[in-house]
Image (cartoon, helix red, strand yellow):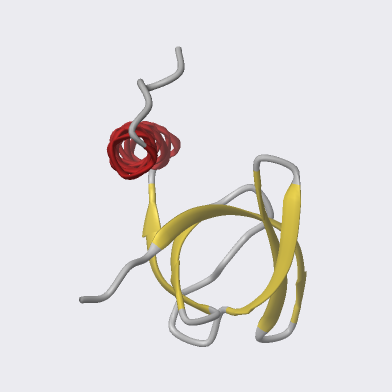
Length: 90
């Protein structure tokens, strides 16, 4: 399974860029993106921007990822509570 996450380009230097999500920056490659610009949202997989997306699409994807993260967290907490014989904490 492949996973790409939306990041916003903050700086560009030739085929390298700095992109950000929720205040966390990372270096990425933009070799596959036609005319990348500061402010563009791109889907990033394995350190490479693979597709430009709209700001709206990026926000939708981030919201969906947050929902999945919340469900996984709840499942984990329930499993740990079962294993310890206790109740799930609120």
